[in-house]
Image (cartoon, helix red, strand yellow):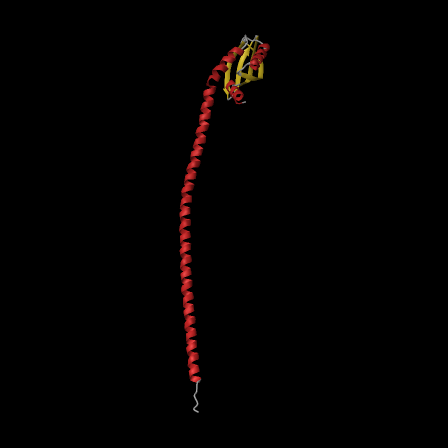
Length: 193
């Protein structure tokens, strides 16, 4: 029988299988590379889309921050206007008060007491004058204490002055502090209760 050598055929088949394996391996590597490249582009697309959304949100946030600043400015203006309106309202309510205070000073002034100067700082009145005696100054303080528009009399100084001719006169110069009592504020407080 003739001898047939099958080794070259097996060798060719191994070479062919090895080549097919390397082709399949290369195809798989190429497929994986294409898949990775497609995945990279897909993720980049998603990332770019999210970055665009973030940029748009940042723009909207900046617009809203500007609106918030405008609203805060308007609130501050509103508060200032309300404060001005309150001051004007208080002035309107207290406008007749000074007339009543002067009228009340005239009514509280006992005979023999003369006023030289009246100064007002806020609600505090400084009354400087002369009286025929210390009892007249005491009467003035009692009248101020009983007054509806004046209160809290505080005597600072009482001095007996001599006249220019050297004779001692009975005139006592005094300085009294009093507080203006606002009937409008008391009426408002009673109305609120």
